[in-house]
Length: 167
Image 1 (tube, rainbow, N blue to C red):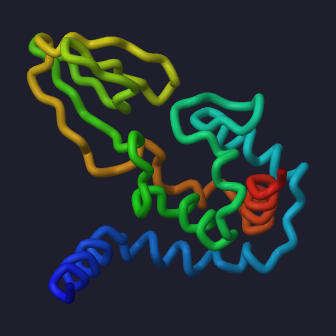
Image 2 (cartoon, rainbow, N blue to C red; image 1 turned 30 degrees about the vertical axis):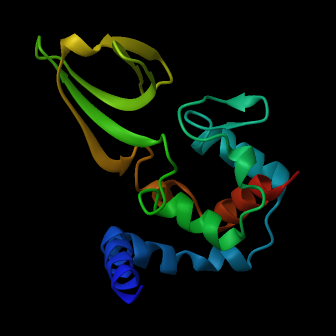
């Protein structure tokens, strides 16, 4: 259906941040560098392990990165530098205000009829009774912050990608 194709194209174009797209384009040189998985492991521990798990390393705030080994290097680069472009189900950030005025920010780790368990950026979790929630809204963005490129050189990006693709 042409109308659906056009609507989808508009939705996906509007989701892409022009600033992020420019940063991704500027860092594509990392894809031409032969990465070193052991050095990439060190980059992972420094830049990613606070939120992501890979094997025995890291925390379970974001997706387990063993699942990305089959992704092409280009997709990994884009996901690292533009985390809001392709947010996996279950990893959208939520803001929550409780009736007592407390504000929370994190992921919904689980939910049932009476409560929601929030997972915070530090990997801790807290159950919240639904009756205590004044507002709960998806922010439409990933919990993963933008700006990782400021902490990584192109060789470090190449090493990280090589590590993520290693068996």
